Image (cartoon, rainbow, N blue to C red; front, top):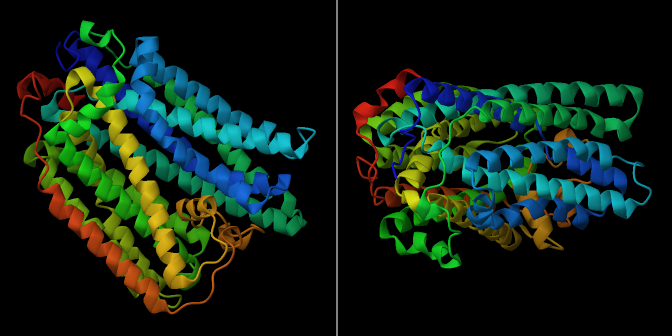
Length: 482
């Protein structure tokens, strides 16, 4: 069975690529508009405890491991297109329903409102996670391996443009609404501004499904018409080439989790970075990455995935050092970290290209599902490890696993501009003042851990040139102009 969609005409393939790019832009805009702060405000209005709020925020991350079952669910529908279209549609509807059903005083009992809020937020994320497995398996077949990096680079560019637009819109509208509520002395209406952004974001998610329906797909070959056995989940670990990539993913995700845990406290306690300024930096970074991603994709096709992966990982590892230099009087050093994070433009092209290129075509969905699940688990472990280190060197009190995870996953969005009564410190139970040297040491340690990942990236093998039966590079000429 050919690896790419050879039965599709060049014109249809170009249309499919354009629709995939449009899908990325619309989905990115929705992703930029949706904020976890809505959940925080709604839970607070309902009257939930700090630990209950923490579990609502942490549960979707802990459920990420369920995506390993995506290949079985895809098999039941028999089509990746049907699977993605249906799951993305339902997830958008769940997001639309969240601020309506879980709004204060809609349901008669407080427990019912809290249950509805938690369930809608959980299943919205779960469907998005599971659909992503089928989506990557599907997108990997739109272009031959020789030009797949360029396609992924263009897709990442559209995704970042959408996210930047969504972030800018959400930040400015939230700032306007917060000021209006303050002028009218109506603090209990703050959640409405975030709900409005979520509704518009859900509409963007629904609109993103429309171009997705026009992307070509293939029928399941005979070797994929039977459900994969459970033991197939072990195959990625038995494949020596893919195992090296998995080890890099585990190292990369765990190091990121460790850094985010330290970063969250550093931004709130040491730098005191305002929420609005952080959102502007995030949006600006996405905008610049959108210009760099196509260049990164071309470099991946020309020079290979591994050099780009190692170089970008080395650049990313320098970001924590700029946090060491930053202070309330010199916050501008943070810009240096965001410059280093521009390297994600290359990382987000090389990583998925390797994930797809090193996986066998007859079990691609299984390998992708394991990749995402293992990396999600490593990220979560990194969060907890970072939180535990903070407990040892910064004297956290009344630690709770869910509270730690929620605080480190959603650092500054938990309490934008100090508007939320229950802050991150209240969720974790308080944090005593500590010497800055302790946090500085942890930041330097995370930089060294991330830098070691660049060394390991050089040990990852490149996919075979023809990707185990894919057409030669000349067959993809039409994709370059698509």
